[in-house]
Each structure stands twice: as C-alpha cells, then as structure tokens.
Length: 217
Image (cartoon, rainbow, N blue to C red):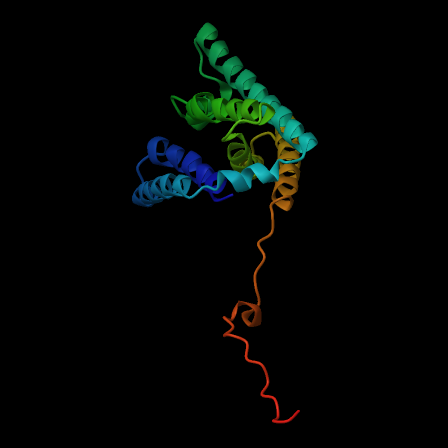
C-alpha cells in the first residue's frame, strides 16, 4: 500500500517540480519529490512478496484484477496516443495543453513510459502466477484511486473556475475509483492476519514444580 501512495506522490510532484513556473513553493516541490523518491526506493527493499501473493490466492480475483489493469492500460494508452498523434498531424497543441499554457503534458511521459508498462507487466505476471505480479498489482490498486480522485477534484475546480465540466471524464474516473478501490479492498481483506499473543501467553514460563507431598501420604 505504501508503495502505491508514494508512487502517486512521485507522479504528482514530478509535474510540480518540472512544469510549474518558479514560485515560492518550488523548494517545497523539490523537497517532497526528493523525500518521496528516496522513501519509494527504500520501501521497495522492505516489500513482502510472499504476503502479496496470498492476497491473490483467489483465482477469480487474480484474473479480474489482471483484466482490469489491462483495460485501464489500454484506455490510457489510446487516449494519450490519440492526443499526441492528433497534435503531430494537425501541428497544433491539444486543447488541454493550450489552455494550461504548457508546451508538454507530463502525464504523456509518465503514463506511456512508466504507469502503462507497469500495469501491463503486473497483469501478465498475475495471469501467469509469476513473482512480482501480486505486489505490483496491489501498488497499482492503491495508486489508481488516489490519482483518479485528484483528477476529479481538479476537474471540479476547473468547472468552478468557469471552464466547461467534462462529464465523460468525471464518469470514467469515478468508475476507476470505484473498481480499483473495490479490488484493493478484496485483496487486502485476503491478507493473512498476524496472530498476536497476549502478554500472559508470551510470558516465559519456568520449569514446572510439583506441589510438595506430605510425609506419609
């Protein structure tokens, strides 16, 4: 779970650190990006792959999660490729980029270069029951709803600011939040619970002494 949340942090603050105009919060963006990056790397070393595998012991959950990740990867890839190729052919920036005043959209790079390949890799390894597929899938199931929620909030803020509300976008990301959160809940519910001994049970016991017997008994 932590890796998924840190992945979202890196995803967001890469945009803030490299794309937002220099402002008083720039050093904060750099600090959060750096701390998030190092935390992400150190968190990878503490991953429990065996525990993650137990979360997808159910064949149905494993296959459903893999299909969901493949569908998400395909939708994101088709959407971004449509915008990029349309811009290349027409010679004009996509409407969203033009409105934001950005020369380039960081999610093009982050999604096509990292998120989509990782989603496909997680789905394939889940279907084949290969090592690493489970923890990649769990991380993505945490990453996706947090990212989708941030996009929805941004869309609502833009609508309040006077820009047209994109209802199809709201519907798609709302569905992603619901499905990814549901899959994440099912996977985490299947995680084995640790048995915690009570203090009385965990207290070391000395050698048993028999009660003294009375003489002549």
